[in-house]
Length: 114
Length: 113
Image (cartoon, rainbow over all chains, first blue to last red; front, side):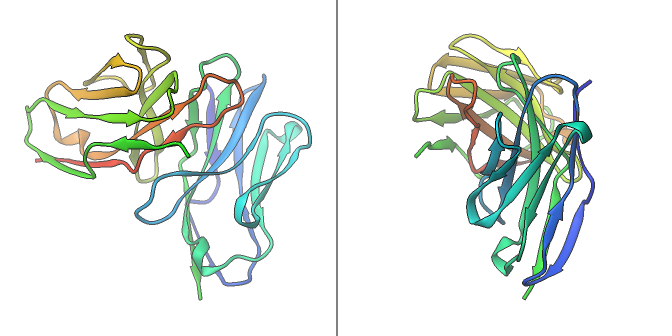
C-alpha cells in the first residue's frame, strides 16, 4: 500500500536556525507531492506542491522543497526559521489517476524558540 | 479564495448517538473529502466524493457514512457514535483539474462521552 513517512515527530529550533523536515513516500509511479502547514487553531494551508518539472519548488513564506525521485523523498527546507513558523507540517502525496486522494504523513510539530 | 465551512468547531455527543458533521464549499468543486486527524497518525481519509450522489470509501470508513445530495455540501455521519471516534474531523474540497490542491475547513473537534 502507498504510504508517506515523516522522519521527525517534533523538532525544536531557535530563531534563525535552518530547517529541514524529511518526507519519504512509497510508490513507484507518478505522484504529486504537497506540504501543508497547520498553525495553532487554524486550518491546513498549502505551503507548496510538486507536479512535474523543476524538482526544486518554492512555496510561500520562504519555504522550499526538493523532489528526489531516486530517493522517493520530498524534504522541506527553510534557511532561517522565525517564531511565527511554529506549527505542524504535513507531507502528502496523491497518486495519479486516483481522484486526487491525498495520503498524509504523520506530521511534524515544529517549535521555534524566540 | 476558496472557503470550506464546517458547521461546528466543537461538538460533544454521547455514545450511541447518531452524529452529523456538515461541510459546505463555495467554489463549485467536484471533489470533497472527509479526514480524521489524530496525534501521531496525521490525517486519514474516511470517505470522498467526486460528484453529487457519488461516494467512495477511503482508508478508514468503518462506523461512518456520507451523503452528498448537493454539489456544495458533503455530510459525514457517525451512525452510532463510539468513544474511539473522538477526534478532529477535517473536510476538504478540490476542483476537477489534475494539478489542483485540496482546500481545508477549520475542522470539527468531536468528543464522544
